[in-house]
Image (cartoon, rainbow, N blue to C red; front, side, top):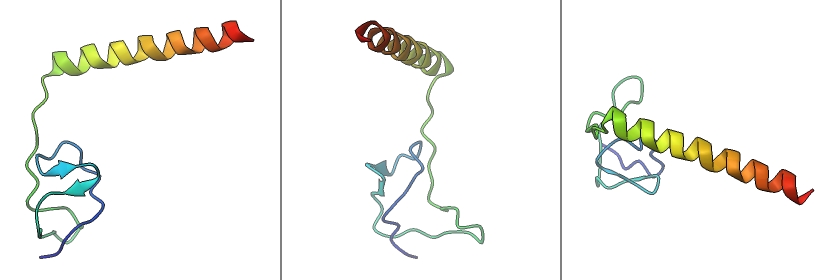
Length: 68
């Protein structure tokens, strides 16, 4: 068991700000966390958020081009 200071698994319930909230974890031979608990995110929610982000990025691009 060891502490992982830089966890990249944002869909784990123990993830917070690139850190694991567990004091210690166990990893398999590939280095994958054995304490990982996947957070379920509904597909419709992800679709809506992706669409909103694409619109925001497109709007930002349009504003940047209008400034030039």
